[in-house]
Image 1 (cartoon, helix red, strand yellow):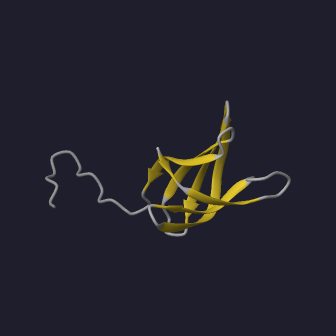
Image 2 (cartoon, one colour):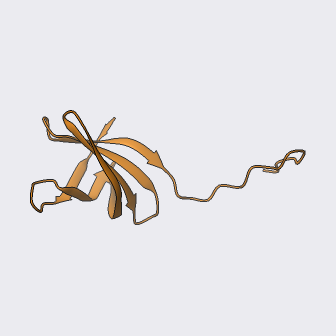
Length: 89
């Protein structure tokens, strides 16, 4: 898990939802919170950033520590070859 700095919207409670974060010196603007779920002591957010990538951010509420729990790139990948075809690189 990587620690990070996270700025949050504070509505009816503090740290209600993340709006941007800094990871390894790079700033990410969150354009969409796609999902949110809870586990004992932590809240998870699946977010999309302005570059189209997806991240799962974990907020440990007891220690007030944010970490990266998952990542998926939005960049298009070449399609897999059909049966009998050879993939060219």
